[in-house]
Image 1: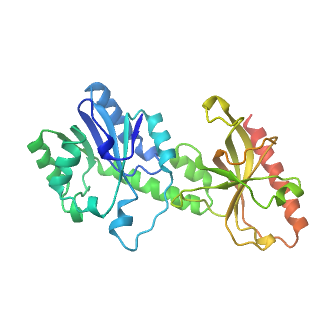
Image 2: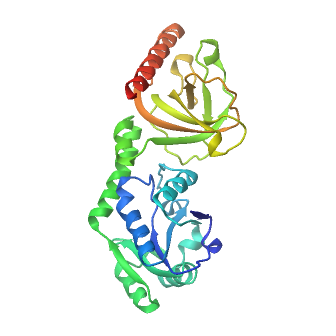
Image 3: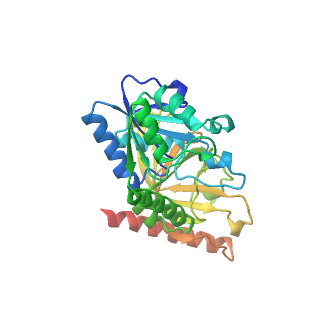
Length: 319
C-alpha cells in the first residue's frame, strides 16, 4: 500500500474507486466497506483509495469538540494495508480546506486529483463548506463529471458508528475483552521506551516505560493489563528482528508512591535486553485489575507478584 500525506502528493495511474472517512480502529464494522472497495477495484481494474483527514475535521470546525482516537496514523496504515487497500491518503485538514465549496471539493479533489470512477459513501454524508452538500448533490456531480456514486447502507453506517463508540467506551471502562471483540484484533499502544525512575528494578520487576508521542491516542482506563509486546532484538527495525514477548502493563499515576503523572509501564517476562529509545508495540489482551492505592510498599510488591502469576497462568492456558 502507498501512503500519501497530502492529496497533492497522489497521482493516479488509472481510474480510482474512493471512499472517505476516519476509519478509526479499522474494526469489524468497517470490513464490509473495505472488502467491497477491494473487490470492485479488482473486478473493474480500478485503484482503491481511502481518503481521510488529519486532524479530525470536527476539531477544526467546532470549538468544543474533543475526541481521542483508536489508531495513530501509522497503526491505521498498517491495518488498512492488511485489508488490501492500495492507496491511503491523509490530507491535512485546516481552515482553508474547510472553506472549499462542494463544487470545488468535487472538481479539485475527486475529479482532478483522484481521477475518480466510483465513490462509495454514506447516504447521510455531508461535504463542502459548512457541510452544505449531501448525497443527492454528489449524485448530480457524478452525472456531470462522469463518476458513479454508491451508497453505504444505513445499517453499515450504524455498525461502524456503534462499534467505534463502543470500543472507546469499553477501553475507558477497562473492558478490553469487549473492545477487542469489536476491533477484531487486540488494541495496540505504540511508543518509545524511555528511562523512568527505575524503581521496579529494585523490587525485581523492571519495566519498560513507554512514551506515546501522539497525544490524540486513546489510553485505556488506569489499571493492570495482560499484554504481548513486539520488540526488536537488535537496533534494526526489520520485521525479522522483531520478537513477541509476554508481559503485563500498568497504566496509572502510582498512587501508592504518591505520584500524579500518568505513566505506561510494561514488565516483560523472561526478557532482559536493553531496548531504551526503541519503538515498542504493546498488544492489550485482557484486564487484570483496576488501579489501586496500597497501604504500604510491601503490599504493592505482593500484589505485583500476584499480577505476574495471574499473567503467567493466562498464557499457560492459551497453550
